[in-house]
Amino acid sequence: MKLNEKVICADGFSMSVQAHAGAYCLPRMTGAPIYREVEVGRASMEESMLMDWAEDALRPTDTVYGWVPVKVVTNVIAKHGGIVSGAVPPGVIELRV
Image (cartoon, one colour):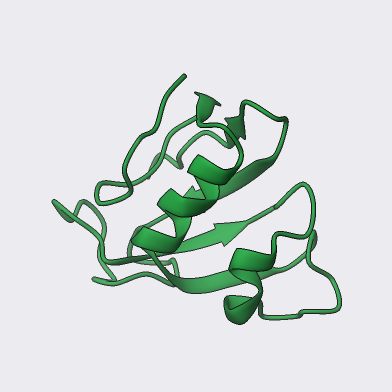
């Protein structure tokens, strides 16, 4: 299984966005045509829009954010100026710059 490359946004914010059978996502399967919720990790800084899904809110840059709605992830990407590099699972809108 190939993981998505970390997303780097225009303002420098970065995060990993994954969806596969071993990730905290819906549907919880590899290769779904569209995901409704995805797993976020390795955030480069605390992002308030993600905190409701933090596994450990005391360590926002060293925790997993499980079952994050794709709409929230799309909004985080927009807030940080769009994607400069990296990849997101199907269902997350790729706002590229």
